[in-house]
Amino acid sequence: MIISIPLILRVVPPNGVYGFRTASTQSNSAIWYPANTFMGWALLVAAAISAVVLLILPATVKRWLLWAAFLVPMFGAIVASFVYLNGLIESGPL
Image (cartoon, rainbow, N blue to C red):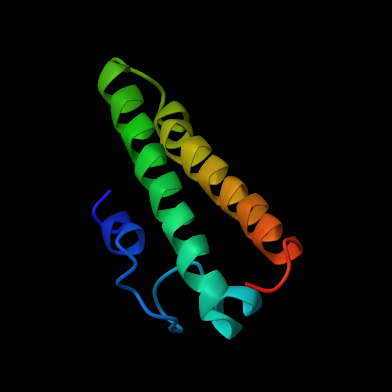
């Protein structure tokens, strides 16, 4: 959850280490900030969902289910971010 806050607040400039780094986002700061803000929110929601599911699951649950409770929401956040990025790119020059 903590790593999503700087993305949401738009304080992370285009860089090669941290953020939603694709060729499209790194070459255009008008795309970088909205794409990273969306991904920050998506990751925050995914982390909250994972936390709630992990708290609800019993301690005796299989290890693969613990991983799934973490990975499925994260995968959903990543997919949603790429869909959003595609919409930004298709909407034309910003």
